[in-house]
Image 1 (cartoon, one colour):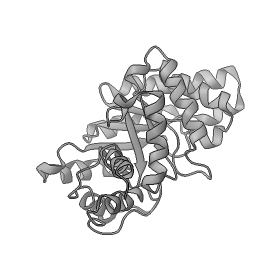
Image 2 (cartoon, rainbow, N blue to C red):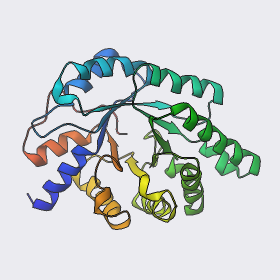
Image 3 (cartoon, one colour):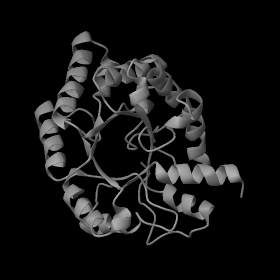
Length: 265
């Protein structure tokens, strides 16, 4: 096993948002996610779940001091990005009231594909409203790069997030045919690097990152464009469910407790 791959595995674990967003998720499935969040190799950056499980995750993390650094993340306007603003704001307020630390918000990317000025402004205004509702919570904006497809649209979506004050740009929901790609990631990272707020904004890759080799592609891109100082959980995340097994295999610490994920994210 190469030292480079082992180092990538360590970065991937430290920056992982260990995720369960299956349509049929239950408290038992979320309990399994909690059980897999602590290994001999360390803990992930966050656990990402549906809003209804935020309270359970927070309570579960409090039972083990070793899990104290793990943050609680939940999704909003997920997965379509097309929900009305008021229900989305209610979701966000509920996440925070239940103890969530981070919100992964889906941009109304379909508005950008329609291309009308009013549609684009409405999408930006929704991000602005959620940013205000989030107060000090971390806000990650999912732009669904695989559906936007065109670099110009990916850049436009990235710019909306950057202008409206999000903390991370995130590639994908993991619910569409095309998840993360290196090409889309490069456009997003370059948008971050070029923006006046760029030094304070992070990047999250999600959708199809299943192995350490997959993760290494994005680790290298972040290091090249944002710099090696960005390769920590404050500015880099990997949203995944199945990646954990390969990380632990590379690090020689076994497969953890229980099955590893049900759905790539």
